[in-house]
Amino acid sequence: MSGWFWWLLIGIVMIVGGVAALLNPFAATVTAEQIAAWFFIFGGILQIIAVFQGEGWGAKIWALVLAVVFLWLGISLLANPLAGILSLTLVAAIMFLASGLAKVFFSFSVRGTGYFWPVLLSGAISVILALMVFSNFPQSAAVLLGILLAVELLSSGVTLISYAFFVKGGGTDGTARAA
Image (cartoon, rainbow, N blue to C red; front, side, top):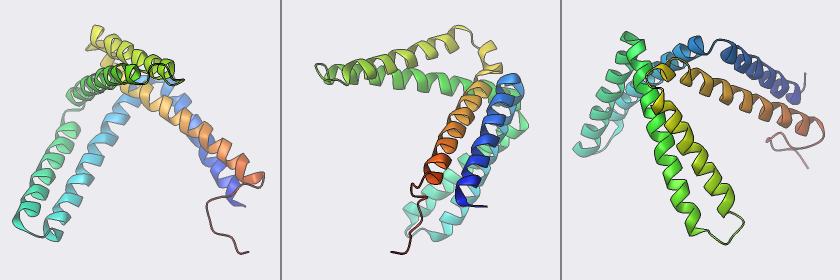
């Protein structure tokens, strides 16, 4: 099988996962929370390794502090998944709001260009999403992370399928070819 087929297969699997996440957003939310927990634990382990790699006490102390924080976050999320879902949803809403406001303010610095309306619209959408999450919190926590996971899987799946057909049609697959 050629390289394009693997990209196509991975894209299809991601789309199937995205559809499954949309069909059961609560299960996808719990899954997203658990994945985040394991990433924090993995990050904490890497930070412990960094303690021994760092030069100077400042770097070692900073790596150790980050290791403790990452491990604490990961273990807390694993031990209390529902509290983790609430916390991660609140963080997502705050990020939507901060990102949206930043984009709205930035849009005015590009007023008069073709970028103004797309940036302003993107910012407004982010602010509206944040307000929707905040207005229905904590109920929104039950599905928000799952829906975000579904959208990401669907989007990435479509991208990978498009890339597969690009490669199949004679585009590059990112590897060097002999001349």
